[in-house]
Amino acid sequence: MPTVSDRTPLLENGNGAQRPKPFYKRVIDSLSAEGEPSWLHSYKFFLFGSYLNILLVFVPLSFVSHFLDWDAALRFSFSFIAIMPLAALLGTATDQLSLKLGQTLSGLLNASFGNAVEIIVGIAALLQGELRIVQTSLLGSILSNLLLVLGCSFLAGGTKYSESNFQVTAAQASSSLMTLTCITLVIPAAYHSAKSHSGGLEGGANGTSIAPLINALDPRGELGLDNLDAGSLHGLKIISRGTAILLLIVYIAYLFFQLKTHSYLYTPTVQADDDEEPEMNIWAAGSALLIVTVVTSFCADYLVASIEETANRYSIPKPFIGLILLPIVANAAEHVTSVWMALKNKMELTIGICVGSSIQIAAFVVPLLVIVGWITHHDLTLFFADFETIVLFVSVLLVNFLIQDGKSNYMEGLMLLTLYLVIALACKLLSLSVPYSFCPLLTTPLR
Image (cartoon, rainbow, N blue to C red; front, side, top):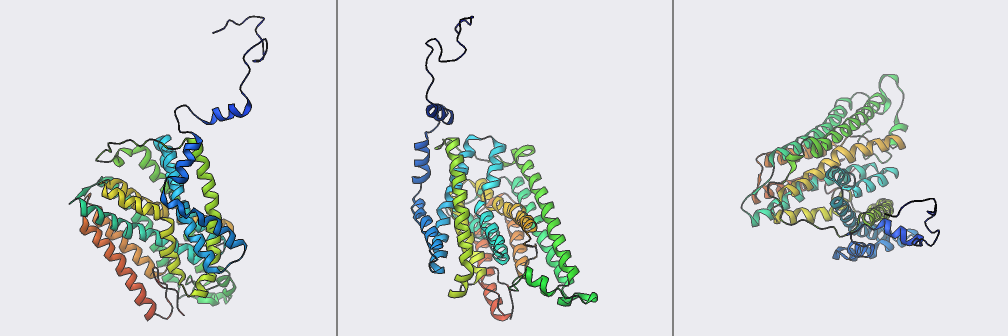
């Protein structure tokens, strides 16, 4: 270390000292840590690491079709397909960030961006007044994860292994929280059923018509709120908002339980032999996550804007769009990952993807959208149609029964898939037999 004297220059370039690096080189050095992948390698992996990224060509098509006001079917199709690779890229960026962060920050990151597409599509639909699309898309994501994806994973794993094991205590804790969130959806339905015969549109004893309030909240008559009086409608909002706040608190406590106090419960019973090396540096992954989130928000907005016209012009049921198509496009990457992990006998990861994602939606995304609707004066409630509430309840009940022993096989997967198909069949028959009904899987409200 050089001796400092009264002749030592104050500035680094004085008295023949070595000239500093140019500004742009110092910026590059500050952004690239020693031993980490370069920016070029990071974005090469990010953009060319999956064959699914070929579908990124539909992103500019989504923008062009929206601004040039092409046919509704083209706008819907281009935006629909564009979201699929974007959802996969969100998962890739999140995974790469998780490899460099600690356990707690990694868990919070996955909790925040694990269902980013559902949040983006939900907020876009909410701000455009498509409350029915918000409800059906979120319910469809839960049912898809619990029955279709978990069933396919158990079935795929069972064809390769006679029996797969996973941490039963952690699985039961997760399923118990899922049961709680399901019960919180039953209570608004029970409240609606108890109050639905007390006043109707005339507002009860005070004789004040609340038809304008109902029309503002539910202009298409799709939410089943037209048989409530003013007090009951206000009570339903209070219950939904209070429940949403409580669920968010419980979800935060669940993250603390999972990541901090009882993290040992979520340690895989079979440790993986290979440690994954990061393919992206942390700055590249963070910037990619931000860029893809912004692009996804635009594509989701264009997708929701085209739903109404597409559904009317081509007779596509809106609940089918909400409960089948949107969950598939939003969770396509997670679905493939879950089945792939089951084939590798990594059932903890499969349970975490399916049940964990359902918990995120039911205990975080749904309450979050209720709060956002409250702030933006789009009164989203936790009241779902009776049939939908029962379907969700029996689905959670079956999942609880199947995972309580900490083991899985192909027969359990077959049971989950069977329930999913039975629900679809019941929806179809319900729409044909009831003059006005809400089908949560395949049909549209019929008058």
